[in-house]
Image 1: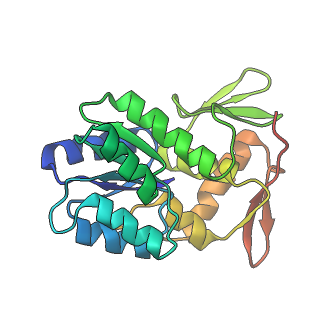
Image 2 (image 1 turned 135 degrees about the vertical axis):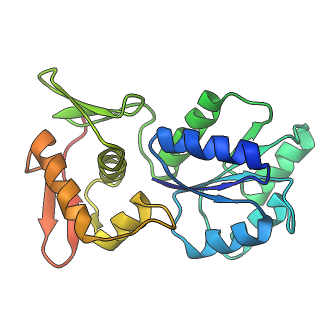
Length: 222
């Protein structure tokens, strides 16, 4: 899943970006409101973590501009402004959740995952099928027979995206947009390699190829 992190504090922004990457997200970092607003309109992000006290344009105005243009990307506000009125203003502007500074990263991560899954109607908690469970905290698969497979970062991001969009035809270009970061080499042909690796772990029948269209993850929930 691809995240836009908007944070002007250089130290905190870098720390959060690294922590989010370790948690299995592809993360683009923006440090001002003008740049963030443009990226949020151009790039297909799954979630935005948005600070309010930004240079050039404050985060609340960025969020209002997105919503005015019917950009419904899920947004978690992250800010030192913790009064109840500011929280109300954030929610009225279209925020999906609100985390005040200082905070624990585990809390932010839990809220990010909850907002992501709520936005697409997925169940909060482990992502499971009748055949296996994706253990998101460990970034591994546990099969029904108890066998486990550790995933690489890209394998984890790809499988999680498949599982959050079951039954949908997902093109290679869409998968690359949501698995890779802005400045990464987005070679869609590499997706085939990772799909084949996942098939070897979870079974060839769970990820179907739609010729000329892409892939479909087909599995009933556990």
